[in-house]
Image 1 (cartoon, helix red, strand yellow):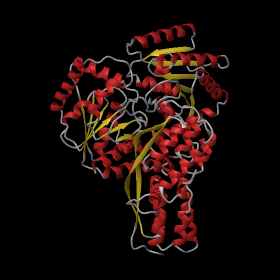
Image 2 (cartoon, each protein chain N blue to C red; image 1 turned 90 degrees about the vertical axis):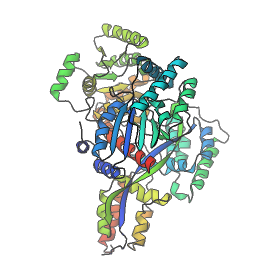
Image 3 (spheres, each protein chain N blue to C red; image 1 turned 45 degrees about the vertical axis):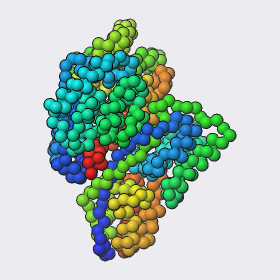
Image 4 (cartoon, rainbow over the protein chains, first blue to last red; image 1 turned 90 degrees about the horizontal axis):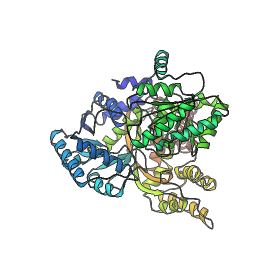
Length: 396
Length: 220
């Protein structure tokens, strides 16, 4: 577990002292996070790091989780997907069950706090049982294109909060409450981002059977159409005519039929071309992803639709230039021509890869600029500052 | 050495951003929304740009110019918006009128550039500034210099730009130099520093340079 002083090694000079000063204003205040679980990446990963630090700073920070039966989880997953814009069928019985189970959760959990931050949709209806303090809904996904009927149902709960927080302007749904913007961040000491020794790199890449005898193009992300892995293969093929490179596509299929079909197409491509490597990794393969990003010459994130997606920030922290699609949070992270490029097509991706390979001096220069950009804007220390500012602003 | 009766206390700040669910997807929408958006939003996208601008990002002077250049691809409008100096207007309404006039004039007799997808739209925001006392105080110019050279760069923004444009608990650098240290010439130089298209670190360096000259001349 990292302590606030550990971040002096990685954050900009003065950042930790600034956090200490900021925290003085809310010392002793009770700050509660509620999520649908403690495992996995995203919000849970951030909370595993920030909750102990907030306590170290003198804030009474706690983290509760909601739970229920299998029907509850199934409805919560479907609700989340519909709020993210996917076409889903939600039954009235299922939604009623979800509300009832959260009612039971509210009775079991200690929800007494000065500020309660409820993350994403699963625990969202807890707000109906609020008794005191300020309540904020923290939305980590893009709900601007939520299914209309689902949003109408969900906003009866979301509207009961004092405020909402979104990762980007434009990610919000229609709500009559103040809506703040706090971009997500990465923890430089997590398994996914911490420094790896040369020996660890050799071990991990050896286990994955990734040779380092030629420039590596790496894309990490679920095998979903939104991430356009087939487009990445086509961009690689355009590059391959001129440069002897290897492409690594690493991600998860999560047992979803569409993703499994895409994975099987990619495996077929890999079968025909030994320089295309497709790795199906479990969601918790953070060390492997870390090693792959560090081994990459160029990191690709050619998504055509995405939420915030911190992949570029992770890669830039490892000093890699990133070529990303113009979608969601990618364009917020990549500073075009400085830390990488944003592209709109397969041809654009191929052009930029060739541009970097033909001008190799740009690769470390962009990588260094990317690391500084992340140090300032996407490290967990910045999110701590934003969270503390939110607590100060809403509880004064 | 001059000694102020009232010490200067340095504060940094955090900008808590609020999205207003007001969006423009083309230039005509930008024109209409500019006319309707809350004054705090006009402030955020112009004065607030100085807090967010970084040396290695391409500078456009304000968020409106940046959007016109990068998302709409209308270089001419971007140029016309980029040169707007927010400090030249005594009120935010005056600044708003000027921005509206530029867009209106630009669009007169021509088709607006194409509409962009929602995620590339202009999303109007505002901010809430949380002041952070840094525990540093000064009663002499030498102490003030030491504080200025060490404070978080957000303090430069707060004590120069925010205090010039909005009512704040924190005091402006220039105000204290004039009123507490009786250094009106130095205060005027502080007020005339142009943060346009530069970084807060460069502004800090310039201010430190002014102080050094004053101290060398034995006027501190």
